[in-house]
Length: 474
Image (cartoon, rainbow, N blue to C red; front, side):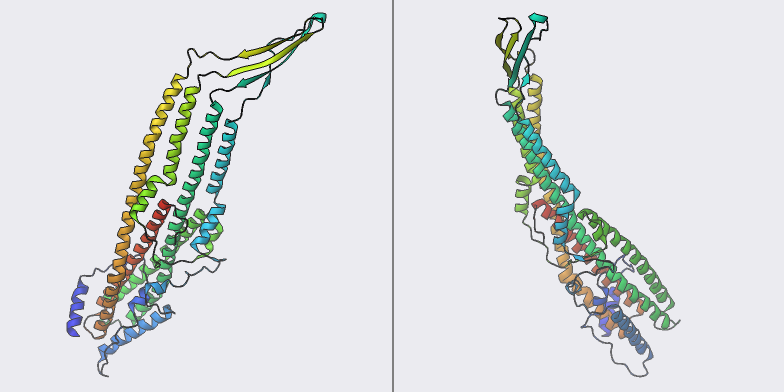
């Protein structure tokens, strides 16, 4: 045991005395169920009895602060996250998505834009109305008065109206894909913020419990403070600083949680849910993604690409429309004249059309050809941007997922084991109370890093689900 204690003590010298802003699952891992108890001591071994007493007090306060023992991070998240006292209900992610799909004004706006585009497409294909036109003046001259009546109708040639409606229909389809694009952008933001809220709420819960432990540890340190005792004055000062920083971090965490809840409510489109609870777990396995499927879908079938493809088709139609524009529409119609004198009645047919001489729509044809070429280049640019987004999101997701797995399988078990050894070494008198606290801080920092990684795993997974336009995320 002395050799073991010295090895642990040497390692502890390398641990920097740094207290993190937030803590994760300190209580359950600082005092695990399988930890060895302090060695049995003789009645005259006063320092050992003091060490035992310190551990007993800290253990007792830990039990008071944490009513239900948690043996693992998964167990800590097995139940729904706590609900505020004023909460009306507790929301799952699927329920929030359903609300957002129903009430969010951005989606309602997109629906109205689709309806507006449909109206434009209908209007674009309608033929011109006939109009009253005799091509001859009315004459009021007593018995020589002449009266005229006639109707003129413009006849559109070369399928111009059909092309106009086809081009307008492409805009309708673009607006429909814009709705899909906005909807999945909304779902991505909602899913990301949901897990940000879960992580923030978890930090507040742990900091609440940790504040009780640091307060009790400070009281214990003051109880055993002595110039030559087990707890030196400098150790008590460190405990006091720790307690003050925990209180400050707790206040900050509460503010951050409130802000995250408000952001989530704004993304959903219903501010009333900011005071409700949210059910979810950071420790559930996230969805699995295949990089090749991501690349293929994002660069060929996503809403961004479909909008770019429709822009090409629309510009192809508009180029055809510009080419047929010089062909003149014909306006014709019958007219009839009658007068007060016999023999003044007559009938005629009027035909008019513009003569394409100087204006043959040359400029518009050139402009539309350039627009078509630009839209084709835009499609390639959109594909490359989608591939870039996939590469960025997938690489970050893969990196944090691998790092989180390493924490789960190696680092977290090792820091738990270190905490066990530190408790044994302190109980056996191998090193002092300050070194014991250093080990405790290391455990806290490791778990804080782990929950940060899990948060990043889920937020990057939400990005990938948005790129794949997945209806079901979990």
